[in-house]
Image (cartoon, rainbow, N blue to C red; front, top):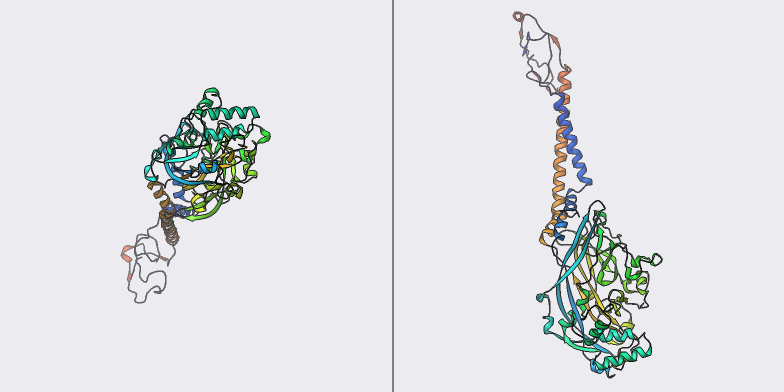
Length: 532
């Protein structure tokens, strides 16, 4: 039915049953803008990882950050298990009845290493952090075979054997004087002693005399394996990176970018071996690591850097894909990686000189049980059983944040004995590398809070991000579609698109016409009947 109205001079036919409702320009722009924003955010989520950004923020090094708060108090960094090589045929070997010295492994005696960061300072402007590490070892009976006070061992005498080795380079008269002194105080090459005393120091007449008459050299009156390792009188300051790209990368030790013990102060002697290039303490690493990223571990007690080699990528059960590193076989082989440690004359394949870091005592570092060492290290020792599974290394690092997921490696301490033929009691040990014991260093499992963060970052997070992408994409498309719809009807209605005709000005002359045939086809976009 057509109805002629006096309200306007012209009329038109559209699909509306009433006056067309047209959207304002502002409304159109709002829907268009929201649609573009949603699609842009959806696209941005494809190229960015908000979960990772949040995790990096939480693990940043900054004043009052979570890392800063943790470092203000004691932190349990590693568990150190000590194994001693108990000598089972000391008398027979000294008497010449046995060709080889027989040893057996006794341990572990495990200690928790609580670490403090004294004099902690974060310089955000310079992008560095400075601190003086302090260590407090706590005995862990649940991870030990027994309390070391309850275990007796027969071990090489530190004072006697190191003195014999050091005196081998002195003139004949000095050696004879030493022999007379050692005989007078009844100093022997082997001691039967509590494991605790051997680890933490015991009184020794020879050592006491040295401390009394040479205090500037021998600054201690007891000597033990752990006692020297955790020397509370030794203080040093580390400067490490505080930015994401160099987080905890060692910059300086006591103001030097290398090891003064290995002549870093001399510019002509500076090499990678004695420089802090790519060196970390092994607590945390920089972010965004790749298998090609070179890494080294430095601990002051090791007196050198340990080279790491990438081996594999391992998926952890709580989500992350960790980079698996192992201490390189090159670490104790003669070559560029240990050339600086050969400066003092000790350059034997399989071991590394420790003497500059231990008051000049003839000590050497090696892999546990001389793992990967040559046959010359085993010629006069029986009982060593190197095993990759037991004595090898494994360091797992989450590459995005540089978080250490697991650490296991072992280092052995040995006495390097020179020409001891001048001493009747010690001559059978002449020119030997004598194993004392080794440390197995293990990092405890991640706290549950950190595991949850890893699970969210690698498992839960990606699904949440995908859901956000889909929602934003659907919202964006919907808003742009609605914007197009509004623009279309504005164009149709505002442009007077339809069937136009003249309206009657006189209301009395208005005519109603009944039309049986539809004005427009049913397939048309316009409706069949409209009010005009």
